[in-house]
Length: 541
Ligand code: FSO
Ligand code: SF4
Image 1 (tube, rainbow, N blue to C red):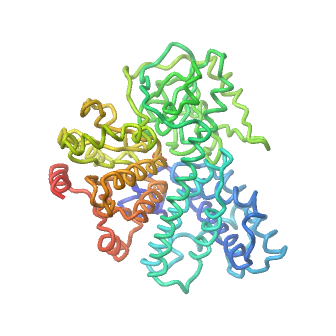
Image 2 (cartoon, protein in one colour; image 1 turned 90 degrees about the vertical axis):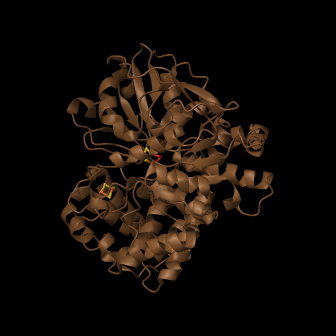
Image 3 (cartoon, rainbow, N blue to C red; image 1 turned 180 degrees about the vertical axis):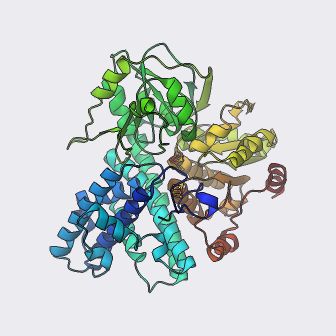
C-alpha cells in the first residue's frame, strides 16, 4: 500500500505498511482499486460524450465511492469490495451500451476474486504515476474531488444537485489517466477543481439553509441530562433529522459529537426537546469519550477511529459511506428512509452518559447571521476595536503539534476575532476569549463545508469596504488541515483569490517540492512557525 492523502501520513511522507489512521493494507489497496474503477467510468463518460443527465444512479454511486475513500470514513473491506464490483458492473454496462469509448485499462480490466483485486490494486495505486510532480498534482486533484463528492452527496441527500459538478468530477478523474497533460495543464485543472469546490459548497449551503433554515446564534449545552442517549457524529444533517424524528417521545436523548455540533445552530432542529446538546470534542477524542458516553453511536460520515474494545465497537453503527468491520451498517430504503429502531432500542437498555464537562458554547455565525450583525462588525473595524480577523477553519487531529492552535488563539491580541468552521474549532472554542462590544472573539460558522460562509463574509466585507481585492481586507488565513475535505476548501479559497494562506500543522505530504514551490510562488502558501513569530508576522502584514 501507499497512501499520503492526509496530514497524519507516516513520517509526513506516506503510509506504506498500515495507515496511521488504522487503515489496513487490504483496505488501502481496495480503495485504490475503487478509485481506479471510477477513473475508467469517467473515461467512458468523457470520451463517449455521455449525457451526465442520463446517469442518475451512476452519478450518486460515483460520489459515494469517492466518499468511501476519504480518511476515516470506511474501514470495512467487505463493503469496499462490494462497491468495486458494483462500479465495475456500472462501468461495463456503460461501455457495452452505446459508449464503447473507454480504451484505457481502467475502463476494461476485470477481476473475479479478492485475490485478483489485490493483485490488480498493486499496480494502479498512487505510485503507479512515476513522475513525482505529475503524481503530486494528480493526487491533489483527486483529494479535492473526494471532498467535493462528500459535499455533493450531502446536498443530493437533501434533494439538491448541480450536474455541472458531476460533469466536472468525470472530466477531472478522466484527466488523471491522461499522460499527455503537462504539469501546467494539471495546475490549471487544480484551480478548476477549486472553482467547482466553491460551487459545491454554495450548493450545500443552499441545500442546508433551504431545508433547515439559516444558522443563528445559539448556545449549546455541553453537559448531560439523565436520560439514555444516542451520540451522532459526522456531517449528514438528513441522518440527524431522521434520528430526531424517530427518537421523538421515546425518552432517548440525542447528542452531537465533533462535526455534528453545528446542527444545533439550525432552526429546524430546535423543535426537538430531546436534542440535548454536544458531547465531547473533536473526532480524535472519541476513544475516551465513547467509553464515558455509554450509549450507541451513529456515524453518518468520517471521522471514525478504530475502537479499542468490543464493548464500544458493539455500540457503533454506521450509515451512508461509512463502515467499520463488525459494526452494524444501516442502509437507506429506496426512498432514502433509514430505520434507526435498533439503535433506539439499544439506547434504552444502556446507562445515561457520564458528565465530562458542564456549561455551554456559542456558535451559529454563518454568513446570514454575521451579515445581520454587519453594521456592528463594520463599525468595530472602522473604530479600530477590531484590528484583524483570523480565519482558522479546518480540522483538528491527534498530533501534539496542533497545540499550536490553542496557544495561537490564546495569544492573539484582544482586538482580533477568530472566524472558524470545521472540527479545528475544538482547539479553542471552550477558551474564555471574551468579546468585542458584544461580538464574540470566536465566531463559529459551522462544519468544514461552512468555510464557504467565511468566504461569503469576506467577499461581502470587501464590498462594504469598497475594496478591489479580497487580500486588502484585514483578514489573515491560518488554516489547520487533516483530510480531503480540507483540500477542497483550500482549493476553493485559492480559486477565490485568497493569498498567503498559512497551512498547518505540517504541509501536505502529497506536495512534491516542485508543486509546493508553485503554491508558494503563485499563492504565497506557507507553513506555520512558532506562535509568537506567526502572530507578529500576521499582525504586521
Ligand atoms: Fe473534521 Fe474529520 Fe469536517 Fe474532516 S471530523 S476532519 S475535514 O472529517 O470533515 O472537519
Ligand atoms: Fe496514512 Fe492518512 Fe492514508 Fe490513513 S488516510 S493511510 S493515515 S495517509
